[in-house]
Image (cartoon, rainbow, N blue to C red; front, side):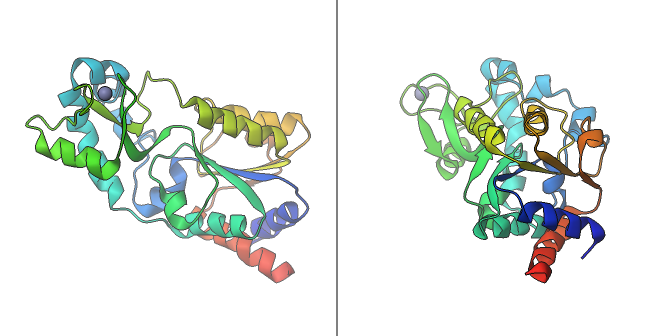
Length: 252
Ligand SMILES: [Zn+2]
């Protein structure tokens, strides 16, 4: 247990609606690289060239050529102790929801139930023309069967995308609305592994603080909201988040 974890445990114990907001830093300990970091993929490759709605529409083989190895890597990863600690907080009735920028499904794999994926999820395939949906397994089977590696819709023949939101594509409205609904109810927001650089998640800390709520930030890098945080930690989430659970146990 650390001083930070004890302070956070104290805050959580007297809160009525706690939400967690997680980003790429949550999954780096599971071996998933942060594409936005200083050494990340997006420093070397322009996402608009490989991962955008534009390239998906005009050159789907290029989109899938970039996306497929990433999907294959992500399907093999496992949650870490940080994911498991958040799931435990939800089981104990302390955490109401996890709002995540991650598309890796690791919160769900770790046992979290109320998971709001604002950047979509790897879990499915989607046809942008007729809105048909298929499972990830089915999507990958179709990609494997295609000569160009592009999965296609059996209904309308159009190329299919994964459920991950592409650059230039609108975010899923239902997820954004659910995130804002939680933010309007929350009296504590725990940011874990997000640098709060991307809309809409970067709106949420301000929404909670403006209504008198408490902001906790556990993120390695600086964020624009650091000065508003009641607790600001920089440690490894696979250690820090279980330490909060341990602190709650110690306080009984
Ligand atoms: Zn279709």
